[in-house]
Image (cartoon, rainbow over all chains, first blue to last red):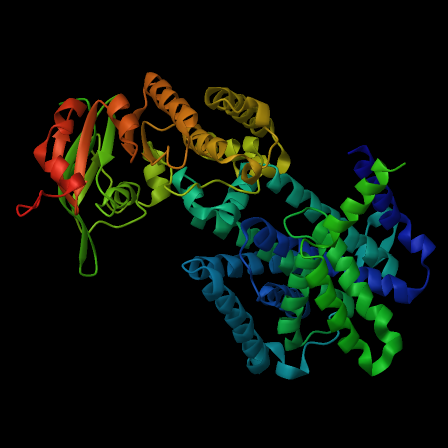
Length: 318
Length: 260
């Protein structure tokens, strides 16, 4: 236990001083992408890891967050914060509607429904040209300066301030997840995964809790989308792409579903591995696929579980 | 009678062409232990499922006190005070014994999303209460030494006890037990019998489905017998034991042309 705490503390410090060690902008870029993916993985973990419902349409919430934040910023001159809050609200509402409809069904039906919703939204993005500029996408979303009065201004177009913004939100969401999981809400979520009939029989309204989970997880994904849009400053309907949803599912399962740290480990690894594989040129994605298959076959409980086992083995043999 | 806890009127459940429960009436009174027996396929579990909302009855009504339970969902029926266990052992398999019972205590926990996120005083108080109640129940079912054990690693007999612990955590007025002693050995069955009696002493009314006749005869205040979805007898154990219709249902009819 003590060792776990020390490792957590070191990792926290590591993320805080990271920009001072890695001055290379490429590594800063990767770190920000990892942060955004971590938000997505944490949010999906609430649904997949704790309530046990597989969604392959997480990109729907991510994409809506990205578009809503960008449109409010571009058309109505909302500041980045305002856009972010609107993204949160919009994805939350979408989450509510999706959950209300989708949880009439379970299992394979639910999975197909989530895929469908993301695909429909992608088509809306492609075809509502007046609003979304279709496949041309939205450009120059940019990041405004934040005026802090006498302290000065923060320029979020620089990578280091943006890194800290993302990091702050990751901390916030990880904390939120920690609190939720260790409450009667968390126990209700887990009971749905473990045994839905038994949960109902002791008075847990599973439908209600599933709706709550999806609202929370959609809102977080929406914030991640708005961060992404402001970071790359350009979005097109590709933000609704199926591979984003699949990627996030892989991070959660590969990292360790139903654990607090697993999805974070997953987000880091599954962003880094494809980057490391760039040296292989065209063979990159093929090799990546093989690695993923190996992880799923040999580490079905998620990487975190096996890291933990290693740590504890070492402790026993001094 | 005022002490009527559960009243079932003309309950019928059909699955397609099959009538699983056919026009059954019965009542359960406060602080009784009532057993529901009958050969396999007689409709006992179907009645349980209909009472607890897992199945929709085809016709008839189910009343708790003076409240109509028809069309309620299982979790709403649990809120009214009817909690059940399942025929096939049903736990939260990957959680510890402690967390299993804590989860069963859900209805008593009155924390909001706000409380959960900000770890308010009310939340911490709720958690303390839950823990205290959980420990009480663990002692009651005799699993206080196994708090941290993962439920699926418990021996079968203790899993059946834990099931009852989860149900008790939901504070039932009426507890429906579906074959609690199935698969238990003699000592474990004896322990189960004592536990059921102890629960009655806690003012819990119990409806029991059970195949172990020794247990049924030894514990029940009243026995209901079903056969092919119809109620064929209702009375005290001594009367049921000698009821010709019950004997016929269990042993079959004597063939007239038996040759020696």
